[in-house]
Length: 144
Image (cartoon, rainbow, N blue to C red; front, side):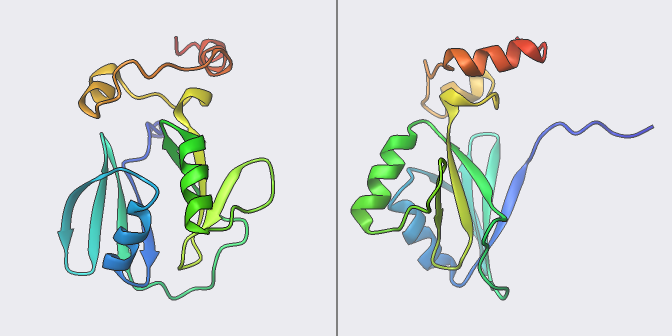
C-alpha cells in the first residue's frame, strides 16, 4: 500500500544571502516572516511556507521552476516591471530571482489549488473567489 500525496508543506529555495532574498521578494509580495534560524528564513503562506536557505551553489534554472500562488497576478507583473525585473518570454508570468531560481506566478482565482475558507480568512483573503474555469476543473475531479 502506498501513501496518498496530500499537498506541499513547503518549498526550500537556495539563495546567496537570506537578508538580500527577503528584501528582493518583499518588493513584489506582501508576506509575514514565520521565523528565522542561522542561514534560513521562513516566509509564511497560511498553512504552507517558503524556506529561504543560504548557500546557492548550482547554476541558474532554465526550465525547472516552482510556482507561487498569489491573489493578484497582474499586481506582481506590474511590480516586477516597475522594479526592472525581466519577465521571461512565454504565456506564463515567470522571472528569475538574483540567484537564478525560476519563479512562476499563478493567480489563485485561475487554478484548482484551493485553500480552506478558514485559512483564507486567516490570511486576510476573505471573499477571494475562483473563476469559472478553475471551478470546472475542481468539479471534474469531484472536489466540489
